[in-house]
Image 1 (spheres, rainbow, N blue to C red):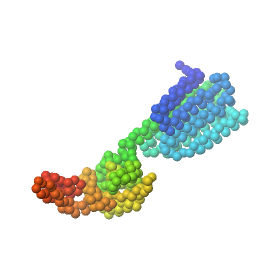
Image 2: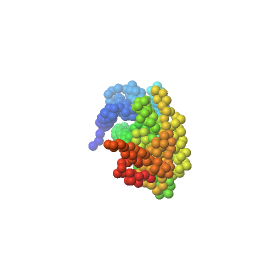
Image 3: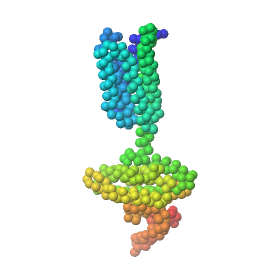
Length: 433
């Protein structure tokens, strides 16, 4: 069964329209993200341009629609390229693809004005498509971030196939054998419709795959990061920290865990408002990023106003310098809020661990953090310093009311901040390092 050119064109235009409507509806359902808007507009431009590209079917002279039809197709390439660049966060300026499109339109005007150039218009169209394909493939392969390379490579393969098709087409059209082989000219037209339909379907699949991969990456990032500070959350920090600690144990290296807690954070919320508290958390998150921590360091918002830092392979001397630098930057850099500068300090509990499991190291750092708070805040306290202090420093006298007089008791207060009852004094003291 053979299909005439008119039937092929009708089928191609129908499929193109269906794909365009599908992409448009998806764009509307997803609340018009910029990337999908540009891609949907590109499909509308190429669908409209392809429908008016061959006006002979409607009894219209080709010269009348030659410029607008091919201008729309060129505009579709501009929109596709800019949509891909936006999707990949590649800062491509509009003036470059629009300038290329303007130069192409000038060449089309020359074809209309100079009769000798009119015969070569199809070759010019082929080279025009090849140029766009090369540009888009370069962006997809060279500017795609790590998380989007798979889908970008899939989409780039569609443009590579399109580039090869138009290279063969340009070679065939530039030869002198078309006049001797009339069937070849008809075959080129039919092949153009068939390949255009297939390329449009494959391109839609590629673009949707790119969008799906980016959405999955954004969902994974949202699940692993704190929405306010942008830092890894507690779950991600725990997962990565356990892996890093396991590597340190395999290589016989120590590691340092630090817990940082913003001092008087509740007072900031009460006095300045919760928006100022949010700014303080963002401010400290920025300080952690710029404080000069090693590249191997892990840090996260551990919960509330508490932040965790893991320094694999770091000794106590190096960690002390980093902790004091962090504390000093916080002290010297107040939060710039709408109502004025908010002073801020941080207390840090640290532990140098070797042979300790993750949970044990975090517990030791937490004890050291409470000791830093009890000692007056705005300081760095190491867990071994707490141990050297001895348990007797945490025994406090209390008075218990009686019917007649008062009974004097000695109540032990655990380093983690809780007071032990008389039944738990011995067990609580045993828990203290």
